Image (cartoon, rainbow, N blue to C red; front, side, top):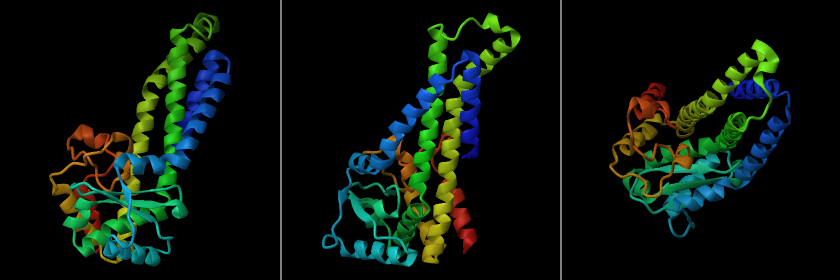
Length: 278
C-alpha cells in the first residue's frame, strides 16, 4: 500500500514539474476516486449478478445454511447472505464492503464434490476474507491503480497533443524530467497492476491461515484446494475483472508468465503452508 502511494506522489510531482501545472493531476485523481467510490458501494451486486448467483434460502439447502451459520457464530461475524452458482466447476467467493454487507457465493460443483470438513474449510476461508476486510482493501487498491492509469494516460495524451510547452525552454532538467515522465507513464500502470496482484496473493495466504484457525483443522482446506486444483471444469461465467475474488483461479492456467500476473498464489504453495500449520 505504501508503494502505491509513493508511486502516485512521484507521478503527480513529475508531471506537474514537466507541465508546470498541477490542475490536470487533481482532475485525474478526483475522477478516479468518484468512479471507484461507485464500485466500492455497488461492486458486490455487480459481482453476484455477473456470476449468475442466486440467493439461497434456508429451506432450500438447510445443511449448507447451518454450516455457514455455525462458522459465522464461531468467527463472531454477522451471518452473510448465501448465494448459489449453478455450475459444475468448484469455486466460491466472498464480497461486500464490510461484514454487515457481506455475501458468500458457492458453486453447486463445490457443494456436491466436497465433504463436510472440506466445505467447512472453504467457507471458513471466505468468512476470513470478510473478517479481514479484504474486499475493502482490494477496492482501495483498485482506486489507486485507476489513479495511476489515468495519470499515465493523461501524460501521454498531452505529449501527443503537444501540450506543456517546449522542453527546450527548460534546458536539460526539463528534458530529463520529460524523459522520466514518459518512462513512468509507460511503466507505472504495469507496476501498479503487479502491486495489486501481490496484495491479492498475500490476502489469499492470510485467508487460508485465518480459515484454518477458525476450523482448527488446516487439512480440511488443504484437501479442498487439492480437489479444486484437479477439477477439470472451468467456471462458465468467469471473467478477469472478478477472478481475484474466487478461492482459486477460475481459469486454471499454469506458466511462469501467468504466475507473475496471477491473482492467487500457486495452489501447491498454499497447501504446503496449511500443512505446516498442523
